[in-house]
Amino acid sequence: MKTPEQVIEFLKEHLNAILENDIDKYHTTTHEDLTLYEWWVTPHRIDGLPFHDFMMTENARIGQVFGAEKDTSAAEAGTRFDLSNLKIQQFENTIIASYTILVSSGTEDGVKVASHNETRVIVNFDGQWKVVHVHKSPTWQAPHMPPTS
Image (cartoon, rainbow, N blue to C red):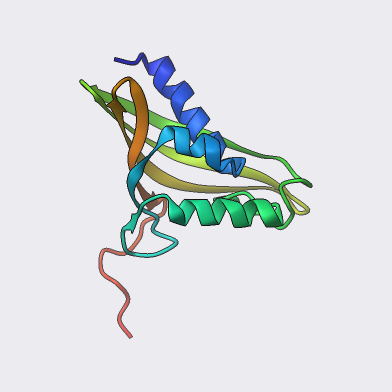
């Protein structure tokens, strides 16, 4: 069992790996059979690590941060994240963390904040905790039905 403080520390390590485009650190906190829904990328489930490996490699190459809304490179401006309304549920070897992530980035026009709701499912595999599923949704009221043509 993890304490709430340990879960928060794990989440920060995992999310910082993504923000820092650190593939090796990301792999230490993420299961190889990861599944995720990223609503702004595609309306379909994404499976495995190759999607994020490519994304982080390309973001590192151009100096960008995943999830940030900004006009300048990561080298030119700061980026941070906060977890709002964090709820942690732990059931034996499974943790469910749900929250609204706020990614703040410095731009030439001032600070911009991007946000979305996230749920991360974390499972203990022989003493090592790994994210196995991520589900993201918009923080704004999206229509229940798709627009008609």
